[in-house]
Image (tube, rainbow, N blue to C red; front, side):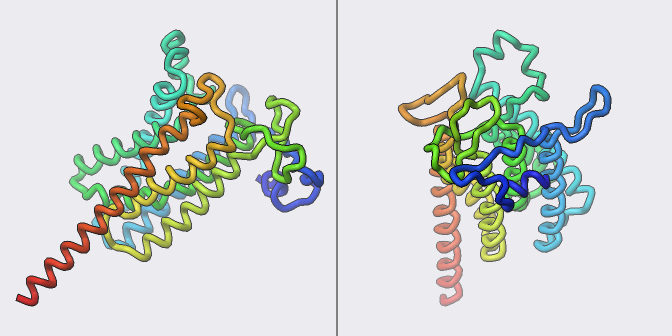
Length: 290
């Protein structure tokens, strides 16, 4: 982590024309056949932060949500992320290859997770949890949407350390260009760090402010969907398309294609919730006047 911070704040990583990749070992610790990797650690940090945020929000909102309830809910979300992320990657990004090599579907340690699949997985897991425990979906979805961006931010840092999901080739004198290992000699956009900043830490700030400004159920959840779709769509222009897919629709990548319905549905639902709330308020005022 120290090396990662130095790339941002220490001049020895800046050559005058571009940043120098810090070449961090993706493995933190080796114990025989077992390895502790930065990428896995980032997932753990994200889930711990999610637990702490959801626990604090449930108290702030005075929900009937015990500490055990928080543990159970976060466990459901973890399962949704892992199963949904893996299934989504298989379906969206490399289905023909996995059909030819079905045993590889189980090899999560070799990579291959999809955000969009993981997101769908968490929604399904949340619905199952809410139905089983008789909870309001939006109460939990809004808390989950507040907790998710920090996990995304740290996860993208893990991608940067792994030198994966790197950006497209940029100009030689681009000040943020990075030469990634195994990605050729040309400088590339550090798109993982762009995503970490916008989809992670900036998104968290936006969700946090919204959570303090509105009490309308569902606004945080759909705002997360809208802003993620918006940020990811534009950042994809700096990210190298997946090698096995390339561009899937004109100059659009699979990530952009999946983000468009997120942005549109999020925007529509935010307008709908606000419109419905105003109608209810006006109806209540009219009834009081009568």
